[in-house]
Amino acid sequence: MARIDTTVSLAGLCLKTPVMTASGTCGYGPELLPFVDLRRLGAVVVKGISVRPRPGNPPPRIVETCGGMLNAIGLENIGMEAFAMETLPRLRGYETAVIVNLLGESQEEYGRIVERLDREEGIDGFEVNVSCPNVRKGGISFGSDPDILEGLVCFLRDKTQKPLIIKLSPNVTDIVDMAKRAEGGGADGLTLINTIRGMSVDAESRRPRLATVVGGLSGPAIKPIALRMVWEVSRGVKIPVIGVGGILTAEDAVEFLITGASAVQVGTAHFRNPAACIEIVQGIEAYLERHGMNSVRELVGSLRAEPAAF
View 1 (cartoon, one colour):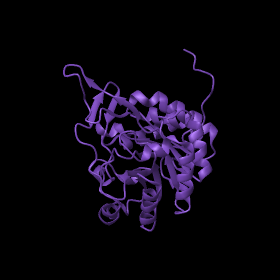
View 2 (cartoon, rainbow, N blue to C red):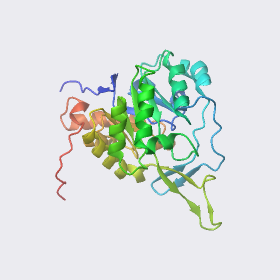
View 3 (cartoon, rainbow, N blue to C red):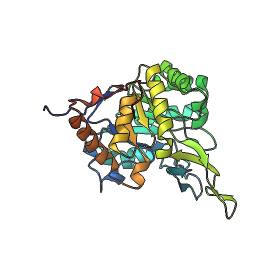
View 4 (spheres, rainbow, N blue to C red):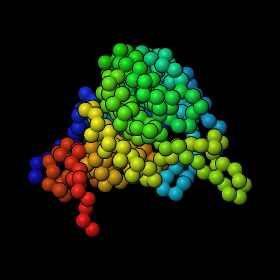
């Protein structure tokens, strides 16, 4: 059998594999180096970057739940200057695409980050976070109003020629409409889904387990919702979709590809297994060989509409 081709084309980028890290779950990338050869990944998506450093929310801000995790980190990060001067140089030379997740509390802040980082060597694209549910202002307002979203994408499109990927919120009435508006504004790709709003309560103390009361639910519990949204959006837009939400195994990743995702991001799985991405890459390769496929692209959008017989 010919060598299996795991490359994918995504928003103008050629990735070695369809497996990427999910922003906010692996720091800025170098944190994985003791466990992972970054050259094996399709892309590293770094922790969200803001104009100025952010301290994030007060603790407690992570709670384990049945089938997942609630977080209310609050987008803690070192800011664009420290990232450009101190962290980005460590990512250069790994022959893996680097995508910078960015966030702002206004359209102007998003624009400042793009303008500052666009000129830096070693950044292959931007992922725009308009969907974080655990901050008091910023991101989520852009991700819940279609007019504001499209305006933001248009605004950023004029500031960079690099791939512009919009990370959508699942906490909206019509995810397909939001996706189409992002596409209409000039987005090159879409990431979905971000976390779903949820909460956890300590019954003995009758207090919330998160300092912010409400946080973002991730992990296997949200996978069926993420799959459904990827399927709906991938049929409604012409730009590629990156699937994320509850991917723990290679089989999970394959399901997203079959459903219509061109690539996948692995997030919460890293909290229990820092090498999850590499194991998923290997598992996808084994799946393709087992099914006699020469290319991972044969999987994308290959869902057979009729249900499986049991």
